[in-house]
Image (tube, rainbow, N blue to C red):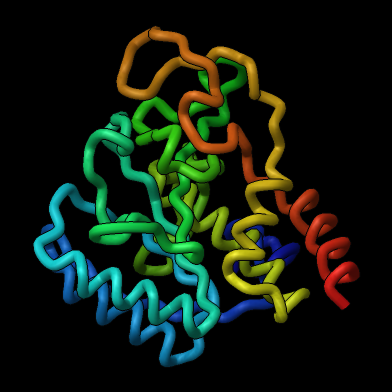
Length: 242
């Protein structure tokens, strides 16, 4: 949400928004009740897009988180979650919070985001990024992202914790211009408008040194988030719905 064109720091993805900063992660893995309470607090205080740049391998009380995710969906709130930085397949290795509900089904208002590098061709995917053909919805820039730090400073940072806010920023732009869009609609637009330039191309599989796989093996839609294309699609979508 950094101000654009002011010559200070960086240009944000979505500037006409307000940030509600919530710390739900203590010094160590967050507890499930911390995650659930943070989601509910954000929803109750007006959040429309929630970025979740955190994750863990265990969930002792998943139902309480699932209930909070369902509560957010009932209030029209989209959750965007960092896929994690272990270079593993999260279709097979658990990474919480998860869009998959305990028992059956999955949340329509929940997205998992993998990280891209700035490097071209087969090194486009960040080597640390988690991936998953059934779980990761989209990829977004997440390496050497210039951002704010404590004490009024700036620095480059990397991780899916940087990629997730980029996607959340795009979602926030759509919500700003088209407030009637539901979480499921925004998710659909982000996915369908994503750039498919790397579909069919081989990239280095995260967590390996040089193993090549097709880009579409790493996520559901083989897409890279794109604000310009998302806004164009949202404009068409809003006109067809009026």
